[in-house]
Amino acid sequence: MQLFNHYSALIIGVLIFLIVLSAVRRKRQWLILVGVMTAYIGAYLALRPVARPSTPVAGTPMLLEVQSPFCLGCVAAKPMVDRLERDLRDKIVVWRVDVQSDEGRQLMKQYHIEFTPTFILFDVAGKERWRGTGRLDAEAVRYALQ
Image (tube, rainbow, N blue to C red; front, side, top):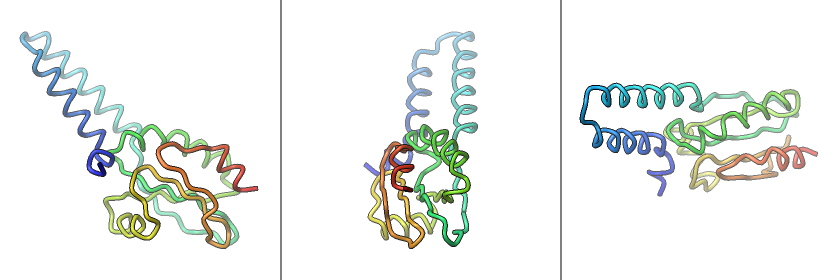
């Protein structure tokens, strides 16, 4: 299950490619195939989440996002995380960690994380205040900050 979860964008991209490739018979269809794959790759590159280290700020809560750049759920959650980070920039620090990195693997064991994306909100003392998997519930994060 983790393999599909962490690499779902790649797996689905390959499946789309193979399905469309099986239907290609003429030159015009090859152009359509190239167009579809170019659009898919372009959208992925524009929307993919990127791990970004963050230095904890004393007295500031931290939102940990454990993600994979090849996970469709992570790609879908990125705009919401970015928006929350902008809205609460003076109240929280967002720390994005890639599960394929050594740090990500260590955090997955430490916090018993099985799926991506997983979000954990820590208070100023480092205690876990909220946890969510799959979808970021911005209202729950705001409520937990109060």
